[in-house]
Amino acid sequence: MKIILVGESGSGKDSIASFLSTKYNLKLIKSFTTRTRRTENEDTYRFVTIEEYKISRDLGKIFESTKFGDNYYWTELDDFETDNWVIIVDPVGVVELKSKFKDATTIYIKTDYHIRLERINDMGRIERDKANFKMFPCDYILDNNESIKLTFSNLEKLVESWL
Image (cartoon, rainbow, N blue to C red):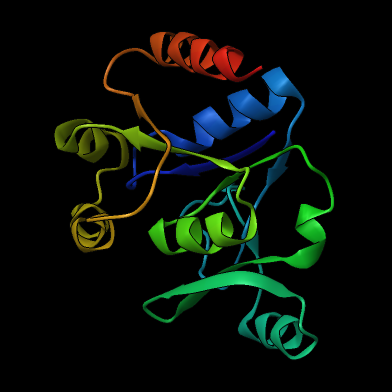
């Protein structure tokens, strides 16, 4: 099972990815990034230096990548050695991954603006997403405007329908 999650900042991607990884024993692929941590305990990415990015690039390890501002985000070829994984990407990553993994399922996590703003309290990230999330391919839309318990229940039903 290959699952690609995509959604705006504050949509609940990390919670949903963690749930899928645990419930269905999927490898949770965390992208690399050159950006700094937003909080001391943030572990949603593999945080590295720009020098480490350049080494990965020069060695041909990068599988897919994107850039926001001055920061790079990417995955490496080794991340996809298994057939059972879940990953969080942006719309550019969706297009790249779907072109390489035709059998991957893309789930867009839909969460209303006011809920996302309440969760992350960062207007800059919310506004940036308006431009980045206009059009991209997805197989399913998962509503995450209610309780996370209801979201997980709906997600279980969706995944069980594929098995």
